[in-house]
Length: 421
Image (cartoon, rainbow, N blue to C red; front, side, top):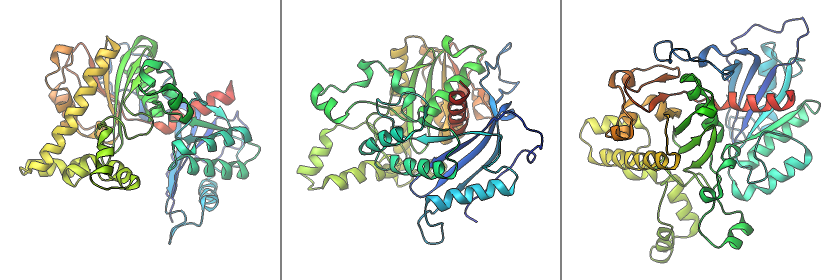
């Protein structure tokens, strides 16, 4: 079986209730991830730890949503997998039905779809129509690896439940509030506008969720808090969030810009591309592959797994140590830059695989930043836990938080709020 499902609730109740379930679909080129959430009940896993929550903290409605089921169908179109996305979503439907959570349930309110690129056209959750699908397809040149698969998932899901509202939630939407001074590149305006060249940003659902969860952890409304969110996974991005709104982010036209990542270079002199083409004789496609798939930590030391890099560093491996140092140097630069952009920083939040699970990265990234009011507590930072928590020292003017991200819940919230409005 290619799909795995985890059910954490009872089967259908026979008594009719108001529809409150959201099916979240993340359709990739060769996989479909899904979650079924009930938005009428709070999530017990997203509450702050009593040991680290600020006294008097309020939740501000930020934690609603209980996961009923989740899973993934992989190897779509490959040997040993399912034939296509239609077959994959049929499998998802069958898995859910076998647990009494079928797509024909009257409790299902909406399907929420992750769409990577919304360009400047889509700046919030959007009810899907034929026109919207056509507009998303027009944005394929800006996200050729992602938007086509997203559109395929939308079309198949609409065929399965044409009567059900379906909503697109865009990775880029949260960053639409960036001022033009942050969003525009300093190139000829006419050329930039003609080809859609500007900074869009990504990981928006994660940055939105984590910034709100961080505010809740501090017992404040998001409008009262300035947060730097560091989404550190294989892909990585930083975001400066002022009073709940993005004012700058590290990724740009594509996810290549910004921090050093697992296989991506992050910031690089654009003339490197010209140099590799003219002097190295490399075609554009090869340079593209180099910067996106053979750079970053992998290009520096041959590994993009921080567990392996840490093991090698402990053994005195100089290449692994240098890769770590370069990664941290770039990260610290963005923390400092965004502190300047915001003027006042109330919290720094680490999230995603590396951000949530690497005390060494968190400690190294913030080491020596006490003059900025940032002081991490070594014992709290070393604690392994799966909940949102503070790891800053009691006297730190800037709170430092570790917040597990929940992009599916963020998508569900956006979709559910739209159809309930």
